Image (cartoon, rainbow, N blue to C red):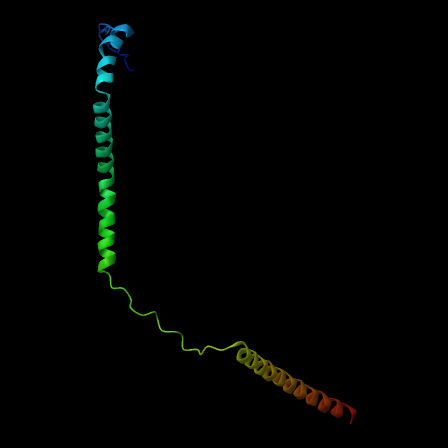
Length: 127
C-alpha cells in the first residue's frame, strides 16, 4: 500500500503594491511624450536586428546557391536535334497513304489465299 504524502503549500508572498493610474500618468507619460522619437527609433532598431538574425541563415544559403550556380558550367549549345528529318504535312500524308495501301494489299493477299484454299476444298468435296 502506498502512503499519501501531503504536498507542501507555497509560502504566502506579500502582495505587490499596485501603482495608482494617476501616479503612472504623472510620472511615465511625460517621459514617454518627451522621448517618443527616441523610443520609436530604439524599437525599430531592435526589430531590424532581430529580423536580420532570423534571416541570416537563409541569406547564407541563398549566397551559397548563387555561387554554386555560377560555378556550374552552362551548356553552350542546345542538344542536337533528333535524327529524324523534319517533314511537312504533304510528305507525312504520302507516307501514311503508302503504309495504308501496303497493309491493304497484304490483307487482300491473305484473303486471296483463303479463297483459293476454300475453292480447292469445295472442288475436292464435289468430286
